Image (cartoon, rainbow, N blue to C red; front, side):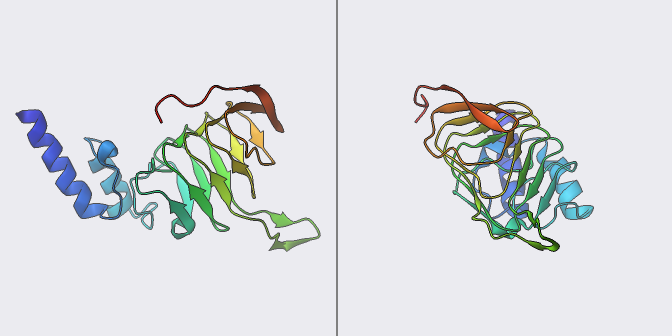
Length: 179
């Protein structure tokens, strides 16, 4: 009885402060911490979903996500730069200290940015601790990025484990089980 009352309160508060965020799996007791940092202290206040106060999200309005996406920036120390766009599909897991950088400087004029397509993270991707996803990268369904990896080019085929700097395919993976 008490647990259902708590869930009802968390859900009501979540709807009030994050009306566009539909994934109620993340509405729990830590919600009040996110509300304090985002709504009162104004850290990452433009994001329409809960974001950890140590994470940084630039241009959250340019993040196109499925309705039930796992929130970017909920882990500790994420850096999400969406100025050139980021597309996130369902069940994308983002570990702590991950950086997703959607645009880069022009190498011949540092005051300009190069034209790149948005970063695309397809369903069931997992970005492990400390990895970096650079501008224009597309990760296919069920791509796992190893801890500390730097992904400089796309891996659109999916069902792979990639790792290293620059990242390369380490091995193929069987299809994701929970589809």
